[in-house]
Image (cartoon, rainbow, N blue to C red):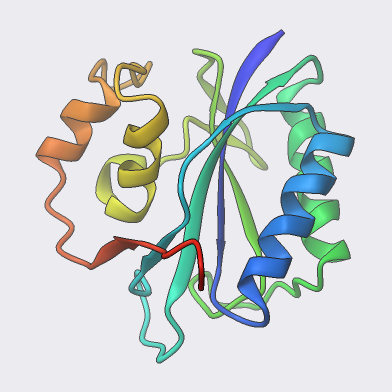
Length: 164
């Protein structure tokens, strides 16, 4: 079994319900969720929007290939109502990013693992650090905790009150 780290993100619709449905579908179609961070409310990264994002990192135990993970996570996004737009950064109901697949380094036309911008984004590093601070980035050779300390991103990342 391989440890897979995914990032859930979204800023449209009933975010709590979408995240609940996404985690249930991931457990059913991708692998067993072994850890999950709190949900964090974060400012949009790379574009302007009045709708704040929710982000959460999940650790899963999987036996399927990285390509199969990508295919299944994209199907789940579509099932939950995601429509991909021409511009990369935009409001969305759900986004599921593959952060790490074990310690593998993959660079193909359709898939880059580790995710190429982990170290630039506090909205990724804060929840990832909550569940895997000692995890080492296989390219940068730094722990998640060190990447968070080094991160220059100044956007707000705050834990969501579980009662919201």
